[in-house]
Image (tube, rainbow, N blue to C red; front, side):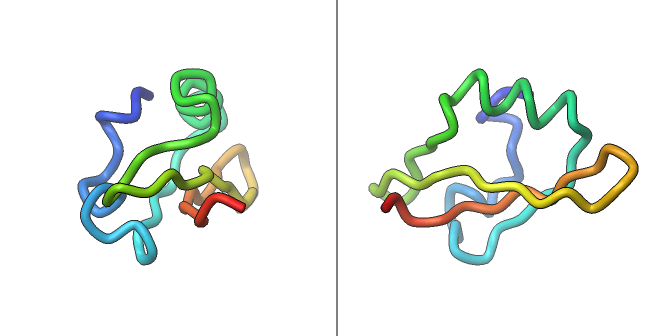
Length: 64
């Protein structure tokens, strides 16, 4: 999955945005972006939480 394929909320409302995806899509996203993404003029870190059965919830956190 490319960063441009993410839900539009990641670019307009990054504090509230989340998306569920497979492990393969998450791996592709992290490789494509290096684990960081620029939204609303700020660099943010892509974070994920394993939900089970190879499914992950992806969110953004401010860069620390």
